[in-house]
Image (cartoon, rainbow, N blue to C red; front, side, top):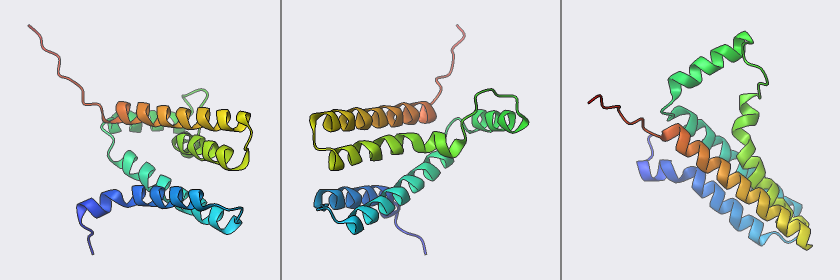
Length: 137
C-alpha cells in the first residue's frame, strides 16, 4: 500500500511534532519522556535515511566511503555518528531545557539547539545544492 505523497513526506515531521507536544506535557513522568525520545529517534532516523537517499552529491559520497573503507582517510568519524550529531544537539538542548532550570541550563540548551539547527541547515544546503553549469565564453 502506498501512502499519498503529502502524508509520506510529513511522517518524520509528525513524529517531531508529537515529540514536541509530549515534551511540553512532560510533568516529571518518565513514561512520557521515553515515548517522546522513541518518537524523536524514529523521526530522525527516517529523516536521515531520506536525506541520504535524496542526496545530489551521491557520487562524491560513494567515493569518500570507498576511501574510508580502504583506510585512506585520516580522522574518520563513523557515518551513523556523523549523521546523528545535529539530532543529538537538538535533543541535548531540549533535555537541558527540561531538566536544568537555572540560567546556565537555559543558555546551554539554547546554544545546543542553535548548533543543531545550523548543522542541519548546512548539510541540507550542501547536499541539495544544484551545481551551476560553467559557461565558457
